[in-house]
Length: 84
Image 1: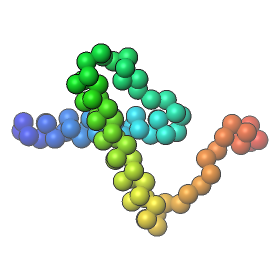
Image 2: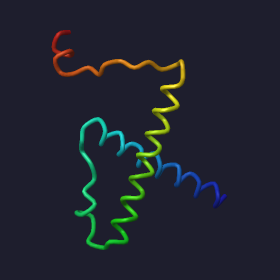
Image 3: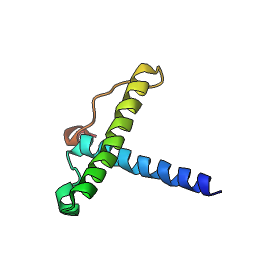
């Protein structure tokens, strides 16, 4: 039971990290690790945690690109939405 709960929390943490990586890629917004703490060890841990999300995003995009179930489309901008 404890192992299952720890696995669930770890999976949730990876999902949050991947979400933050997606926000960074699509908007340019990123977590300011300098604003979180002055402790170098904690900053390093946070940077490593965010790096896991970047890795998950890279792997996910690679798998989806190789799959026949996904296609690449140009993202819609504000101009495309206004034309509707």
